[in-house]
Length: 100
Image 1: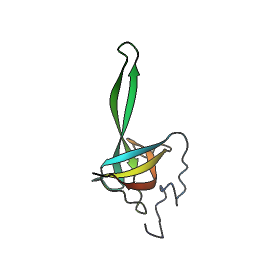
Image 2: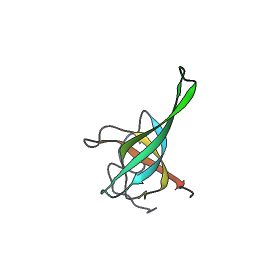
Image 3: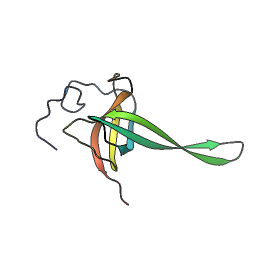
Image 4: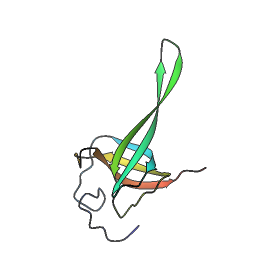
């Protein structure tokens, strides 16, 4: 991590407020500038069949320069105001890398 962050949309050093949902997710794509695509796994119980259904949800999140998450990283994201047409979350912290 760098010591100085000048990104105003940074949830840690900038003026962006985090409110609402907070998720721990995996980064699956980090090719865009200051944007990552994250994926979270959901498990839903279907009472009729007494079975569980696995689902995946993908969303875009703001990736500030001070965090600089890469593909395969496990990060914590928080809900913010709408930052662009598709981004409504920002990375709060990097937890670690996914073990293979």
